[in-house]
Amino acid sequence: MDLDDFSDLIERPHGALRRQAEERRTRTGLPPQALGRLDDLGEWLSSAQAQVPVRPVANPRLVVFAGDHGVAELGVSTREAGTAHHLVRALLDGASPAAVLARRFEVPVRVVDMGLDCDPAELPAEVTRHRVRRSSGRLDAEDTLTLGEAEEAFRAGMAVADEEADAGCDLVVLGDLSVGGTTAAGALIAALCGTDASVVTGRGGGRIDDLTWMRKCAAIRDGLRRARPVLGDQLQLLATVGGADLTAMTGFLLQCAVRHTPVVLDGVVSAACALVGQRVAFRAPDWWLAGQLGGEPAHAKALDRLAADPLLEQGVAVGGGTGALLALPLVRAAAALAAELPVHESESAPSPTEQSALDAT
Image 1 (cartoon, rainbow, N blue to C red):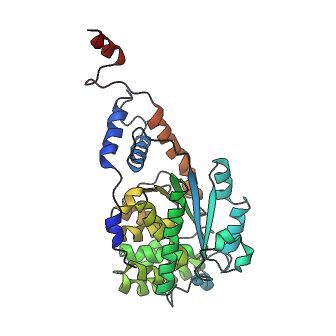
Image 2 (image 1 turned 180 degrees about the vertical axis):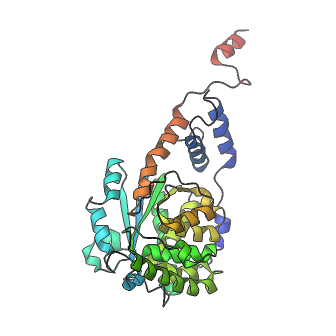
Image 3 (image 1 turned 90 degrees about the horizontal axis):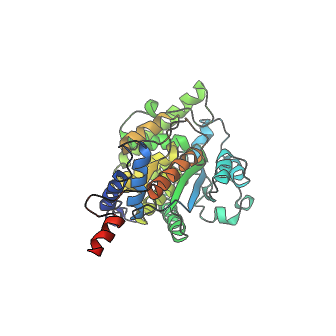
C-alpha cells in the first residue's frame, strides 16, 4: 500500500469557518481569553465539523486498540508477558478506570484486539475479528510484524475508523491496552525525534523499579538501532518496532483525518502513533487533540514534536483511554459554550428592532 496517498486525501479542518467561529465569539460580549482554552476548543470543533455555531458532541466513542508485545518477555513491565487480555476483560466487564469513566460520561466502548496473546474464544468475536497475530515479535531482536501483517493491521485500523464514521461518531476518544506497548512507543518516538533511548524511557503504567527500567532502556536502545535504517518507510518502521496494535492505531488516526472525525489522544502510545501519522501526512494532526500529558518522558517529547498542547496534566498512566476520557467534559463544555452563549448583533447588521423600523419606513 502507498501511504503517500494520505497526503492528498487529508485536508485541514475548515479554516474559514474557524475564523467565523472566532468572530462569533467576539460578539458574546465576554472579554478576550475569558474562557481560556475553551475558546480554542470550540473554534477547533467548529472547523472540524464545518459548522458555525458548533454542534454539541452527541455521539462520542471510546475506541481502544489492544495487543501484547514480545519485548515484555525481557521483563520491561510490572505485568507478565502475554497478560494484556486481563486488562481487556476488566474494561469489558466495567471494572477498569476507563470503564468507570466511560459509564459515567455515557460513552460507548469499543475494544479492538490486534495481537493479544490469548485464545480468541476467551473474548467476544466482535473484539477479536480484526486480530492479525497472537502477540507481536520482540522489537529488540526481530521485526514485530512481517510487512504483510503490518499492512493488514494498518488496513484494519482504517476499517475501524470508517465503521465509526459511518455509525455517526462525532468524536473519538482513543486508548490502548497492552503489555510492553510503552516500550514500542518509546522506540518509535526516539527514532522519529532523533534522541537516545534513555531520554524516552519511562516507568510505565506500573511504575517499574530501577532494574526493570534499565532492561526497558536496553530494549528500546536495541529497537532504536533496528528502527533507524527504515525511518524513510513508515509502514516498515511500524513493522520493525511498532507491533500490531500501534500499526492499527496509526491507520485508524489517519483514516479518521480522511473522514473528518476529530480524535482525542490519550497517552504515550497514541502519541507515538500520531507522530508516525504526522510523518505520513503533515496535515493529519490538525484533526487530533492531546487530551492529557502522562508521566512518560517520551509522551512529552512526542507532543512537543507534534506541537500539541495537552488539555490536562494529571500524570494518568493506566491506559485504556482514561486520561483522554478525563478531557472529554472540557471538550463538551467548549462545544456547549460556543453553541449556546448568546451573541450580540454586529455593528454592520441591524438588530431586529432596527430592522423593523427600517422596514416601516
